[in-house]
Length: 513
Image (cartoon, rainbow, N blue to C red; front, side, top):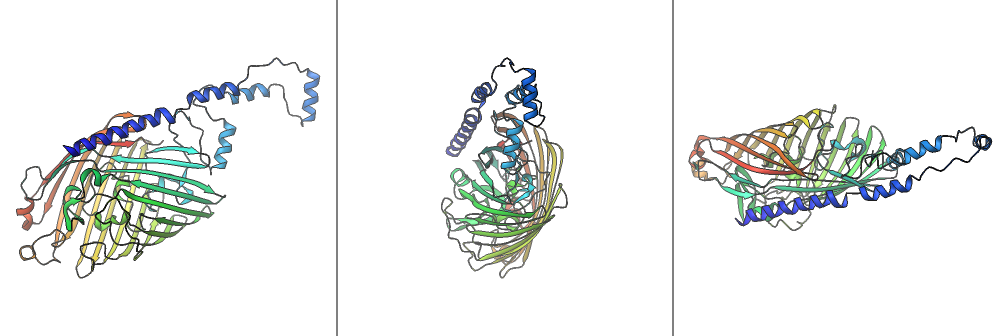
């Protein structure tokens, strides 16, 4: 009950702040009306004689001053508040801010086309994923954007207040249930530096630990990290309060060639695809994949330095980062070590596709197994096809492999897809993951030596529907079911084919058109 109260308090505070923001600080209609009045003086009788006009015309190189004043008045005084920035002002500010089109109404949170990628002045903003990873240019963007001088800011987030029940029939011994609210709140800002440079920063926060507690939320067959000195099994660990604090600088030599540097504390190294909550194919799914620690678990590393270069449709980058995953204190800043390394090659052949292949050495990722290092390799492909601005299909295919010191190689594969049709979101995810006896905290005498791999299969289907909006925040309702299939020797623990499900609200920002 305490968690339910905390969740509802968080939702109400978020909605209240969003409504105030949308209806208060961003409402410029009254001040703009005054500006329009000042910019639109009443017509003054034209007392200039025809002879004087001709003389003035001759003095100014033949420019006809007869009726141009009236036309200029019409340009200065737009007929509606939607035309709050004049054509001349818009072009000037657009030039000053690196090609950003800001001619839309300032009576709403500004939705601006033309903001560049975080790591290239020559790529669209839609290509920016998590960390420095790419998604397709056709990816939808959800957020609120605004400007201040030469700065552009964007705010994004997801909150899933829900009831989560793992193993409906209680046929096994490892299910659980919880009222919780997985969430992510993000702010980004950037500005041009000179004519070819770009500075960017990102802040990402999560209240997972505050809402769920240090042992996270129940999720069958999920593994990774620890709580009170014991490994987390059948639970998804909470993310740190400070999930990303990063800065970057990019320099464009020409339209085809860029270089950039990125530093995060914490941040995300160049290893794996775009993290699950930022992928267009997965953003409507409340749960992390159970293959998270084979695919994209390094997205919160306390100490990251990345350098990269783009040429045309290709990008290559390398990172040095801290391999140890965040400790059990989710509110502090862990010690940066820079003891691990990774490299990634990305290729976007057109606006619909994004491919990546990456590999890395991760030193001592798990606190409870300090002598175990991991060599990780991932390959992924993401596809997005928009039908209209708010209607699209997105899909991701992903493979990850871990080779742990002293253990056999293990693999994970994922297929996920989302179909968005205006207010309706339909999604599915299939996973196949090999998990060891040790990772699932099984008795090696009963289930085999610690290196024994056990295949896990899970398919999830779900749907969300937009119910209403408050300012720029959409409130959707949804539900999902997950069906698991594990090895028969685990039936006494998991019940054969456990079925899990949840019902939830989803708070997220509106799409940027």
